[in-house]
Image (cartoon, rainbow, N blue to C red):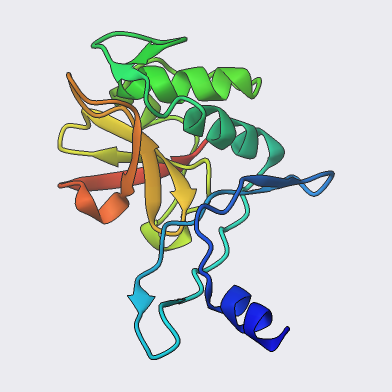
Length: 172
């Protein structure tokens, strides 16, 4: 029996399932795979930080909606339901949450309340370039979901991987 328990303890499990905490307005997203640390007993995964809470239930709904579009392809001017440009994705996600926001990234960059990069919460819109010509939605842990360019699907990337950060706004 000791052998079975030891063998079981050495296994590593990946792919944390998405879980929602009912009534709390918080959803836990899959965490990125952590780097394995080798040793005699095999790889051990380092713990990843817990996701941050959204600023409101509408913001959480927008995050969940935007994340559900991962894999949908970019199309200039598209607003869904299966193709998006950057601001089409954010406006689609907030519409699903019952919040109407402007259609273009430039107009979205003046809507809502400014928020510093240090105080980003899931659901905040993050903008890039000058003049503003790209928007993504912050999802926590330094990451955002966005629809970037032709030939690429909606995806999750690190906010700092994007050039020319121009600011952020909280809309819900």
